[in-house]
Length: 493
Figure (cartoon, rainbow, N blue to C red):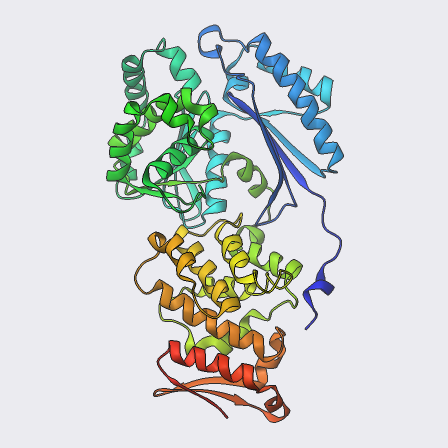
């Protein structure tokens, strides 16, 4: 087996997505395309292109001037970063404005950027594909709230179904209602009457996309003193969501501005909450699940082959990280076979695989800090297709792999994310990985000649041939620690 460092070759060129929305313009540059795209540059500017379109029918001159200035910068950034492919799209404001096509032509003249104006149907479908990219098992309705529009798409089985685009973004809703919240509720209700299939949401999940709705998630996290500030896969039960949305109007601007990541969207929060409150009331979802993946990630997902789309994004990301940062590229299947006798019941196979792949990412850190650094790093990895409880399980497992036990302070920081038995499962798997890594310095090839077995209340480690010399004091201590966690007696044969 080659070391991981030997497998690090020339990296592919980065790819970018430029999203010209009704409120903001954002450039995201990803390290490369593929099943687990990681942003290496992410910058947003609020130009308000959709401001006034609902009433005047045109893009505002000042907003266009801001957009041209910032788009010139983004074109320069993409060039400086060596972006190989830049996908540039414009959504509702440019689509609906009489001068939208003239704006697009001027952008191309000034910067060379070819902006594609997405239809409402294409915008909805692409955003839904982004959600499915980040959560392949998603089943329910996606809602993507932009500055001017709300896209709703029924998703499930890895496919998009019914969809609709409504003019219910905070900018459009403010203009259509004349800034009157009571009138805005009536506007929302009138438009949602056009979505008879919304009752399909009942008992399923509502997946939320868009900066304004992510800001609502941050507010809810702050009020709940939630221990993890990762928006993706943050879930709120429907009853709690209704209570929160009812409480939101009573919060002062001063309170909201103290919440990190909310300040610039404070004025739009109530307008963003109106369509959400109505969809929750009418659709009766089981949970609200926030997604950091949406339109931009959907643009990348569309370019992938069918085989790449079927990959598990968690495995793809963990595999790339292992190749780049572990000492040895692990033979995951061989390690899983070795671990099988001691795997905690109910520990999902894909999480075990992820733990194997991520189990050596801290080797370059100072020995005194490896366990803690690995814990916090895994807890906050920019990875998707994983719930918050699963993040905590992985983080604790790799912490134990380095430290040999679970520190009370770290366990306390994530205990709310876990269910009974999780800490014990992470301890067992972490100790088993710790023993496996110890046997041959992290190279999994040796495990083929070392057998781990359980029989009655005994845990034995059997060496074949010359591999017996790998047994020693440290191996004995780590076998004993694993045996104690399993309430067994450890023996070396």
